Amino acid sequence: MRFSKLRLNGFKSFVDPTDLLIADGLTGVVGPNGCGKSNLLEALRWVMGENRPTAMRGGGMEDVIFAGTSSRSARNFAEVSLQIDNSERLAPSGFNENDNLEILRRITRDVGSAYKTNGKDVRARDVQMLFADASTGAHSPALVRQGQIAELINAKPKARRRILEEAAGISGLYQRRHEAELK
Ligand code: ATP
Ligand code: MG
Image (cartoon, rainbow, N blue to C red; front, side):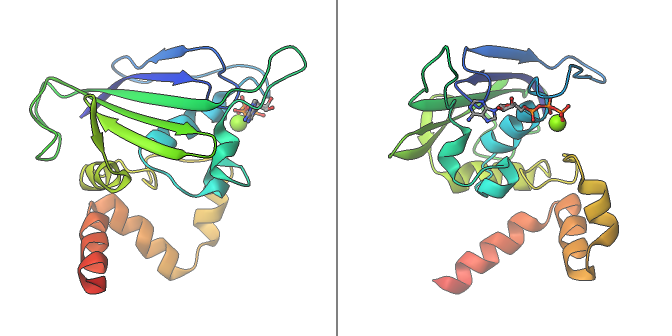
């Protein structure tokens, strides 16, 4: 699965609709401090189902919604969509019918998050499982936050094992077992 486009609307500092095209090869994002580079990475994690406010550097999930500035009022919702080039049909089953796969997440104040894949309503869990099975999930070791290298070096063995399991693509299986045990 190849990510081809990330679209942000009202997410953190990206108040106006913004497209980030992800071309083949390496993509670099450069800019002065505070211009929104980390926010882009957080948008990518968020659309994949990240639900820990701390991973979004916020106190609550609604903190990802544009909070307003002296010249612009706050927004009521934030939306991020991720376009995936699925022409090689590498998406997990159930998401594999089309050449393009679009994942959309929207959060509305006082309402919460809703997800769609190719325009169809789905649950947060469906999106999280999709990426867990594809080993590119919101907690994927492929996404390295600022300061995370130091955290990895200092991690306890249990935490380090979880990182390896995510890399091996088996964390979706653990999640399913956990849910089966609760039933
Ligand atoms: P650095 O080079 O220092 O790592 P960066 O390019 O990674 O900077 P970010 O941390 O992505 O910058 O962006 C921080 C900016 O995003 C700050 O100006 C902050 O005010 C703004 N911001 C964060 N959340 C919101 C929000 N909910 N509404 C509006 N602006 C926000
Ligand atoms: Mg940063």
